[in-house]
Every structure is written in structure tokens, then in C-alpha cells.
Length: 143
Length: 433
Image (cartoon, rainbow over all chains, first blue to last red; front, side):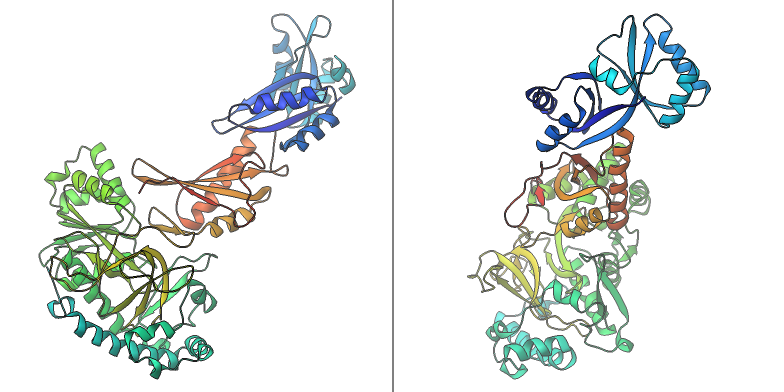
């Protein structure tokens, strides 16, 4: 039910993002989804990749600070109000979304959204009760 | 104005005779009263009676800040506590301050020396002196305070902070003299301008500024903006506090050191040998009259040179050039002494912060800024921005609690702070002095 996300600490200076993508590319790792949170001083790059363990080790070898976070990949109907439906269900239950970002690839007719929750288990229970589809890790890496 | 014409304009021969007599007395006292000095002198095989000329001072041991720390808190005092009437302290490198003591006679001498100092800056009875140096353990506030009172001037003991209120007092109480750090003087000018204050219309006439290094360029800026004469004052708590040396208003060329109370030497900090006359080296001071806290050959770490030529003000006592830096890694940030090792100890107490850091000192407008760059390791890293920002804020708060100065913490990637084979370059000082 959970997806492994790799996060990378980046200073705000030219070429750092390029370096991460180059390192992953050279290792034959495919980026499936990403988001970048930035502040004036630093950024946090969050990635879903097809080979988590390998990505982690090549980035660490290059001296990057990396972290692992478990996130949830949710299937969202790709039509007006589709995302609202999911968010409203979460809001009713008082589940807080730390951040979210969209997957590059569609799954059939639906969009895939990555959610980072404070309380992961509670969120998964709730989404399942609401009949909202959650992807398995393996499914997501292969999308 | 010369307050003590006899002492401040003595022929050098007479001055040196007085210095020798006082040096012999202080060496004799510390040898018998301070176990630290007896041990050091015995080790060097030197006895008080070996000091026959001023040049014999080179046989005496040096005193370093570390020696004061090793004898914390009161091991260097040369009188029993029932003769001590005041204790001040300077900041230390390990969280412990360095306490210094005064007998009543020390306080009298200090007030007199500060009165001389203020007189050299043109201060006199009838002046109102706004003392914005910190009071408390720091010597600046009370030192200036008692000197101004000794001179017969009126004192406004404002201490530091509350800048807008200080400007109100300058407008309403009409002080003619201000004692503060040069950076605070410029800050006053800035805030005053925001408040629409024209300093030319206040009664301020002279600023006695010190406790941090500054330049002639900064002096011109302060003089223009505050519409005053600004003179440089030097002192350090281990030796006395303010009142060790002062620029005269007449020349503003070098700081006159009161040689009847302090014996200055200039040494090469690497070889510890004296440098040729007039060359820059580390200032070393022996106190000649202190009772409670006499020091032999105290290494100030301040770099300067000595000029023995008589000054146009008439003083014959030596002049020190404006300070050209320090021979150790101490930083003076907005008048606060900061050793990189102190920052390090704060960082070490913060989980998840790598032991690699760098301090970037700069000056924004007229205020010193300190940026602490810290490498983020995996233990501290988070995928959430707010967590990392909280980490930075937490370090900033701890440093503020410790030093009372605000710093900016910048999180950087691992291995981006340059490593070096020997001593790490912990400090990058971008201030243009």
C-alpha cells in the first residue's frame, strides 16, 4: 500500500538539480515522478524512481544527503472534481496532507497522485473505506 | 585636554624610570601572592630581583587567555576576597566567563584613567555623557560611567538596546557625548534617519567609540551622520576595561596608551620575540599598578604597532596604531567576542548536525552579520521544509541565547564546506575594514 519516496537535500545553487538527474541517468534509473520544494536557501527534491535502493546508493556515493519517506499513490479520476473528491474525504476525517504531487504517467484513464500524510496508516484505512484505489509500490515503480 | 599633565607628558626617561620601579613592584607582588606566577617564574629560573632594567621584562613569562581559564574562577587574584570590591567578567570560549577583580584602589585608578580618556576626547565638567555600552559583567558601561563622574560630567546610564528610546533621550536630554561601539553609532544614525531626526540639531558633540575594530572610513561616516567628532578608545577587561588607551581629539592619529599604568610590548606572535620598533605585531601588556588582578605580559592577541614620537597634543606616552586584526580566531561581532569554538560547542549539542561548519562574517549596511553554515546529515534531514527550517531556527535560537547576538543559520549540502589537512578554515570574514 505504501510507496517509497527518495528525498534529496539541495542547496540553492546552479547545477545541483542537473547533477542529481545526471547521476540517476548514468545509473540507468528512471524517474517516475518528482516534486521540488524550495526555500530561499535550500530545496528538497522528492522522487519516485523505478529502483529505489540503487538510486539511494548512487546518490549517497556522490555525497548527497538522502532520506526515505513512505508515501501513498492514489488513483484519482481524471475529470473535473476528481481530486476534490479525494481531498474532501480526507478533510472530513481530519487527515492532514503534508504535500502532494502528480505522477507523470496516467494509469488508464486516471491520474496518479502522490500523497505525503502525517498519519499514513489512518490515511490508507480511510481511503480504502471510501473505495478509493491505492497503488501497490511495485505497480507504481513499473507504471 | 590633558587631565594629568605630569603623567601624560613626562619626559620618556622619567616615565621609564617610573615604569621600572612599578614593574619591579608588581613582579615582586605576583611572585609572592599568585601561585601561578611563582610556578611559571621558578620554571624559567627568574626571580623578582632579576628585573633590573625594563629590557629584563623579556625574562618574565607570558600570560595567555588560557592561563586565566585554567585558574578559573579566582586563581589569578592577588588579594584576598575581603579586599575585592568589584568583579567583572569577559566572555570565555567554553561558556565560562573570565572573571577579573578590582580593589577600591583599582577602581579609583580606573575612574581616573577613564577620566583622562574622556578628557583626551574633549569631555569636561558640564558635559552630559550618554553611556550606551553594556552594563553588567561587561566592563564598558561602568568603566565609562565612573570616568565621566570623576570628570564631573553628568552621566545618562542608558546601557545597550532600545535604539528608538535612546534617540528620544538624545533629543530630549541633550547629551553632548556618547560612548558606544562604532557599529551602534552607525545604527543610531540609521534609525535616527528613519525617525526623521537631524543629528546636527542635537547637542551631541563627540563620540568615544570602541570595543570593536573600525576604520577611518567608518569614522568619517559616523562623524558626518551624527555630526560629531569620533575618537577610538581601547581597553580589555583582563587589563582593566576601557581606559587603557585613547585617541586624542587634536590628532586622531593613534591611541595614547597610559604607560604609567600599562607597559606595552609588541611581539611576533609566532616567535614570541620583540618586533623592530614601529613594526606591527601582537600587543602584550603588563599591568603596573593593578592590585587585585595584576598580569605579566598578557597576550592581547590584538595586532598593532607602537609610535613613540611625541604627539601634537603634547602627550609623550606611546601611541598604538589602529588595530589591524587579531592573532587568534576571535571574532568581534557587534561588540560581542565570539570564538568559533563556542559556536562549535552549540552545534555539537544539536543532534543531526555534522561537525563541519563555517562562519561567514559580513557587514550589511553598518551592522555586522554572522552566517553559520551547517552541513545537513541524514539524521537531521527531512523531506519536509518546515522540519529543516525548524532545525535552522533552533540553532539560531541557541546561539542567540548563548551570545545574545542574532545569526543566520544556512543549511548546506554535506562535503560542501572545504576540508583542509591542518586547521580548518572556520571563518570567512568579508567585512571591509
